[in-house]
Image (cartoon, rainbow over all chains, first blue to last red; front, side, top):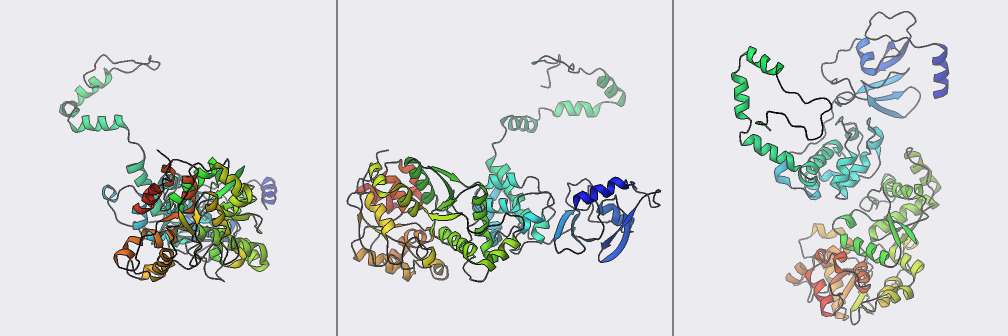
Length: 264
Length: 294
């Protein structure tokens, strides 16, 4: 299948259409199905751009357009095959005879909690998401993930009480919710994973000592005078001290110190 | 010798004492234990319905993980995990129709046809190490400890996945004798501990569990050895409540057989995590001078 595509694309190079509504010469269109209705769209567009080409306007269900915000999860199927595929509309290029469905939001259960109160034990996560134990390891969640996260792996890790493993395995999750949409146990995998990462950060990962010291300095007002002085300056004064500021040389020796050390 | 090992969820949380003692013991016996690096729930809770194939997917997926890693045998400890994995394996090995359905469903995995053998820890000990070799390694014999093997339901049922024939307790008996304990015959060794039924009854009112403990006391048994976290919960952790409610007359300390193994091998009692047992379990071993000096 892949080989045939390669050969045919060698014969007729694709013409990129960009955002243009009037297609450049040589640009080819293919049929796709949006909500069951056929549209002819340029073959080089992403699903999102193709839908906009077809006349749809995204008020919601589109965000960063860079594959990271999780707002545009899409389920699709190729005509003639039973298999479902999953992707992000802003990242997946259209193919001929795709049946498309946008799932911008999934009504998965999200527990309320105070991270300061729940504590760092796996039992806290189990209590907030008891549905974790409805997992039968069918793995549909993993198959649905557009980020290739091992969803069954992190759900298993949570059941095994291994919060760190769950946090690490779920790190690439963009919270799109496709996992939950496929789950026969009605588990909100992505919300449970987010909780695991928060618990990991709050209770398990060692805290940076230098950060604590810096926060203490800030809270004690170490920088207040400096900021007040800056706020009180005129534009001319600010420009002057900006131009005259002491910069660290590009290839400064290790241990370089500025002449003015009052604010260190 | 190297083995691939499937632990199970409970052994990573509430029954660490079953797991850690076993691993430490096998290490002491010269076996290199490798936990398979990806695994999920054995499927115990959901695979008890005969025609419910989706519930076989979990256990089969674990067997596929073992097959992928080139394991010929997969050793496991918990009676429930053993039972569930072994039953799923039997389906994949013998039932062509169900095998095809499950393989067709799991398109993301390699096909599986029962190539991996699921082995219970006790069977492994007996077949690969042998009671004589275990006996030679014993440093603190459990002399004077009158203990009975308690098999519960799932080590022997159904017969074609049982670790030994129904009514026979030779594996755990062989092990306990090798450890120097006095094995007392026990006619309730295969009675049900109350299983998940206890969830529906008031705490301490588990008549099935109480009957087992009373029979044990009557037979002069001082301690029970088990391999099942659910049995340990019902008979061990709930025992004090049964005593308070007058359901049982006397305490009978309960142990995972792996803890008795580790103790007899003279390993540091820290690997046994006795804090997860009841206090009386440690006290009895101290009384019998069975705990190596720390």
